[in-house]
Length: 379
Ligand code: 0XW
Ligand code: MG
Image (cartoon, rainbow, N blue to C red):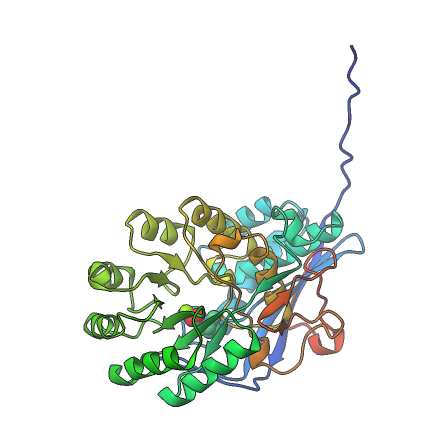
């Protein structure tokens, strides 16, 4: 019996140029965290131009210079360092692209993430598939979003929690910390009283609590079903008190890359993660972390710290491929910012859910007038 030999046709594609743009992201609703208030930001958008008609877009947008070590000008300096090393590579070979970036510059995963996202956008368009299809397939047409409630008085936060639950959110994150812990304890009790059973609550201190206050808060909120997100500054501080807390602990800011996630999980330090797409290195790294969490039955979110429709689409594509039993939802900046990069395919939340973009690649294309002239070009 003879078998017919099928040959995979190899088409050529090369990266011919890269443009980097500054895009204003005006805020309509500030987000007050323990250490900072996020307002108007400038995002960094990367355009990968191939020698075919295809272009892909990526984005990175740290939430200001204080939330985490990553910051806007740092991303741009890193892109300056790595940009020219990528010209001539096949952007569909995302592994090679990432290895080349690592050979050109140590660290700065959040800048490399913008290139990685744009490469997935090109690969999706080249194969006529959505990014979520290339990542293993979507769980459905929409995925859950969660809402982050800015730090405010206990009554205001409780009122907003009730409103968001009525709007359709199944999960809310409450910003705590950076004030007297008594106010946070009062807030959590008032939120519990104001919301109906079933709402999932994350109390996010954004690294700010002392181990003493984290223990006080957890014990005084013993009857509240909630998770404590990044209560203290470091993995070590969290590890030291973890078994004295009454609540599951999720790691966010300390989840910096695949290795820190392996350290935290092998040490049994956490029960889940608030994952940030660009901090960990983009879609490729988040895919690996998704699979680690799946194997260890650890729930997690798929978000970023801020940004426009490109980052939002990338988070939603990965989020759409997470097993529902592991998925804590996506946070996107849309409710906090004015307008969209792509008016025809905006990534937005309706009744607590986000529609997975339907076009090939990321399924969003920023308007040219919004990009303006590049601030940096290669090739
Ligand atoms: C709520 N977020 C997803 C957006 C802000 O950048 C902070 C972040 C978090 O979970 O810490
Ligand atoms: Mg967080």
